[in-house]
Length: 110
Image (tube, rainbow, N blue to C red; front, side, top):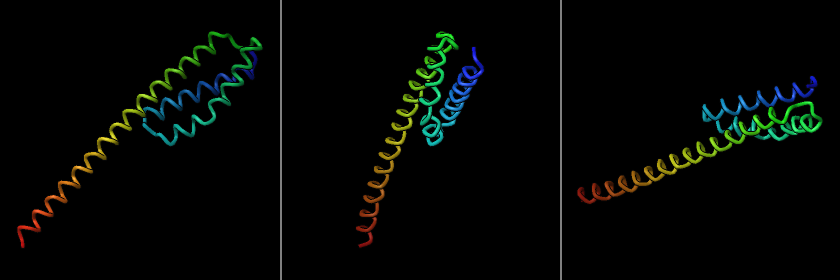
């Protein structure tokens, strides 16, 4: 394994760890920033594998890890979206109840 191939693999490993941490922290902004250049980190690893500087097993392991990460991130994002939707519906119901109360309270004073 060449030194460049090792560095490329190490950079990809580091990014995977950063992505995982951002997901655990639900830091969606950071997650988007980190995700934006994953492809640029994968390309040199794939090139090194094609040149037989990295074993296919090593590369496949990282790609599977990324695939599992994407699945986990998607599930987390759906959960957060559903929680936000529920919270907004609750706010809407609270507003309706407050409005109804205000109308009834206003009538009692008349």
